[in-house]
Amino acid sequence: MITWMQKHKKYLVVTIWVSTIAFVGAGFVGWGAYDMNTNRAKSVAKVGNRNISIGEFQQKYGTMYEYYINASNGKFSKEQAEQMGLDKIVLQRLIQDNIMLSYADELGLSISEEEIILALMSDASFLTDGKFDKTKYESALKQARISPKDYEQNLANSLLLKKLFSAIRVDVSDKDLDMLAASYFMQDKVSAQIISLDRNSIKVDDVELKSIWEKNKDKYLTQTKYNLKGKFIPKVVSDENLTLLQEYYEENRAQYRDGFDKILSFEAAKERVKDDYDMRQTRKLALSEYLKAKKGEVELEFDLIALDDDYEFEAQELKNTQIGEYIKPVKYRMNYQDGYLISRLDSKDLPKPMNYEEARELIIDEYIDNKLKDSLEIKAKRALDNFSGKDIGFVSRDSMPQIDGLNENEVSEFINSIFARNVKDGYIIVGNKAIIYKITDQKLANANDISQYENLLSNSAYNIKNEQLIDDLLSSLQHRYKIEQYYKGQ
Image (cartoon, rainbow, N blue to C red):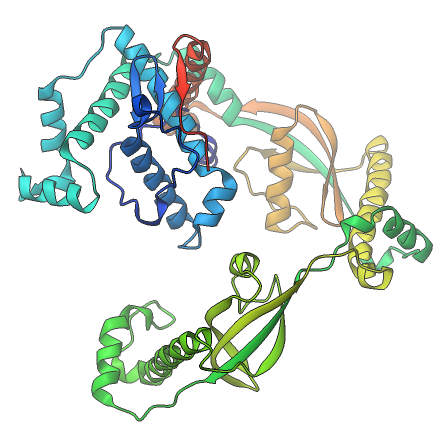
């Protein structure tokens, strides 16, 4: 139950951004669409009497950009940021923050210098041996390209938002807790019947398939084909130099682990170290050849074709490469030999509708899925009219009962679906199975079961209630303060 509740609890809509310093790096935004009126040159927007500075916008953009990089294990790119309109998302959230800050101003709330100093002196990022370290503070801001004045202003905004939220918060009542407990801890007594169908039992009608293809030709497209010219750089096999290999191992020892996640000794990892070292030397050679190829000093040797889903290439990089451009070396395997490939994009064949034979396999999968679902629904409706299910006892949202004919994932999907619906009987399609059910009784978990989650219940109720309060307040304040937006987006 605790896992389910933590997964579903909500948080405040307005985000407090300025509690940490983020290095902006590749996340800086270009200003091609910025209104350069001299009166607005230092701001991206204005809410009431509050200006949102370029620096503040860049810091928040950098924070969000770094968040997505970390969440994607480093795969988030500037192109993806542009596609999702990250700059507009950041600006909108800053405007929302400043609407709330303007309301705080109107209420007469403020932050004193003493409160800012106290916050700085209690920030672990700036402490050395438990004491505020001014040198560490100034060094951190310099590295993040933030002036002390700007950082302390952002900190003051953060503290003011916290003070506002604290002032308007709504406490949780016993009735709130009772209602939430009833929602979270209700148990249903369920009877279930399983009907399954074999996919192989579905007969494929080619006339129907062709009709589907005729009506949906634009849905079934070939992949973009990239016509490349390439040169393969086979793996360099260097002489075994123990000194160099040990140095390489020490630099990268964390990546050499056994099945129990323990770091291997140099001797145990030696073969892998040698292979990785050789590949690094190969990459250096490939980069040198790549630069020569761009200058016309090296000829590419063979033609090859890449598709969007080729694992050797980053799909986004292929899409962004222009005709005639060279692609940086990528790991490649050719004739059972590892190495690196340097290449040039000579032309692209854009997606086009597949002919029937090309699309048939794709159509068949969808066709069988739909036929299977239709057949299951017909059988499930009949079974519901003549129900003969087996009692599986009382279940709650986090239950994982043993149900004959269902695996754990299917049981989990079934239980979640029951509690997501407001009906006492019905059926649920899970893959090639229909689960027909009836709820025959309900009860609330006993007080002892609920009491162990009292704190979690209270926190969840508090978050839900105050999130709605902030959301409603923000909606009502949208037109209270004049909003001027100078930055128009990339």
